[in-house]
Image (cartoon, rainbow, N blue to C red; front, side, top):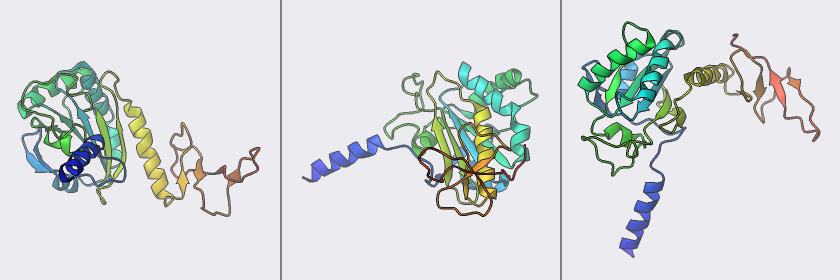
Length: 241
């Protein structure tokens, strides 16, 4: 019976090794492309700001990943303005990262890349964050199939260390980092309105937001619907475009 329980427990863990929103982002120690070795929480504290975006890549010198890092570099002025820290991750060494980032800078039309990359050659961070199963082996060339889940984004609240948002894309599809900016705008708007609002589909900064169920306010615009239920309630955004 004991063996049966262990096997079932292992099977359940293998099905649910990913982290989701609401989980605490794990701390870790890792080398960066800058040449430093840092603890993640200490790095966040040193950077300051409100959020940290950790986004990961399966391999250096791969085409989709290169365009993604370049896209993030182009958005760095807006991230700095809103107090968002950016840190990347890829399953290669510091030296390989440093060479790769020279290519990324050319694609981004930038003098240099202004955010660090975690060198996760032993897959420690990828496993810790549930991007790869615990049994995955690092330290050697890995196939695309072995790396296929390592294209994730985590938006982490710097104060609570809670993961506010996470998503994972397949390897063949480059992520939309304008969507990352939109989500950060939404988080700021929701926080400013003390969690009493939600953003409708395709919302953009400055658009009206919706009162969450159970929230009472004196002033709002109600959209009438056939059910007659008064739940489609809109209020102005407090952050302007």
